[in-house]
Image 1 (cartoon, rainbow, N blue to C red):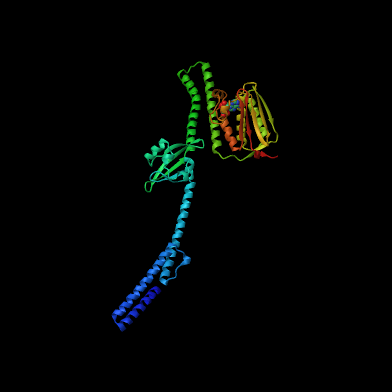
Image 2 (cartoon, helix red, strand yellow):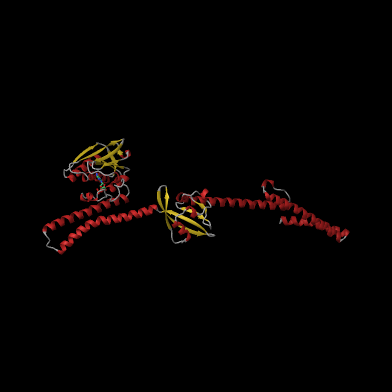
Length: 431
Ligand code: ADP
């Protein structure tokens, strides 16, 4: 309202003067006065406009030209708009930064490609997977960097539904990534790559495991089935064959039973929570294991025990018993009659160590790293003859993992082996 009043008053004065001049000197003089006044007003506004224009080149709120209330309002409104714009621009920048940080932190590789398939942007995982450096490779066509024919083919016939599994040599290991292309915007695309190496390894392990277990069960089942068919065709079989058949079938069914017991033990170790630690009286546990070893050996071996008294540890007695007795029974099973088996339990470099040394067949060095794999055997027939399932050392490995302990193996072919379990010194129960 005040602005309108000001404008009216500004107009009122020249119109009044022009009317006054028209009354005294006639209409021509009055109108000419009004025109001259309007010209002066126009020129003055033009001056202010050019002042505004030059101020716009470097708008500084501390150097506002003081013109008139109308122009002051224009300047102030402009400064307000400018401030708002600055705020929304910095908000936009912050949002962009946050978005970029989020994409950078993604566990998958992301590469933004323009319509010529040149790299516009990529995250850290993409640099790692594809061995590219954003600052160096920005603008480079992706096919120049990934030259595998399968990738080029995939890029030529991009299909949203399918992904490409590509092997990438990374840090000496072959990694497998699943690549997907997502088109967006103006013929741009997003290349996503996910590391599926572990998934593939798991799948291979699962397949191997099923193949192994089927194979392990097939032999005893074939034996049992063979005898049953013989007896079915000829019920009045020769009594000697019958006795032999029943004995073999019984052996094979025991074998299947041991296999299933070991498999269940492995599953329990893999899936259950580590048990609450209890104080294990190691001397009495080792003595009872050595008695079991003597029973298994049927006095064909000499079993020596040297175990420290009062060196007890915290853990699951059931699991530790199964680990130690696996090692001791292996020593018996893989040693010729007359061999000595030495069992020791002592502190070595402040850490409690259980060791079981034999004078048996020994193991060639190339097998040592694979011994704890399920169903890995150096000599399959010897393992089976002596009732082995091929799962004993896998069980030992799992038990040790749950007890923060390590398995150490030293062996010489035909000289013997030593299997040692080194527990952490923190597991020792102070007396
Ligand atoms: P298995 O039931 O076949 O004995 P394990 O997992 O206990 O299965 O052992 C894996 C393989 O390691 C055995 O088949 C055998 O070849 C080898 N092995 C284990 N302990 C000994 C040992 N004390 N002496 C020689 N070889 C051994």
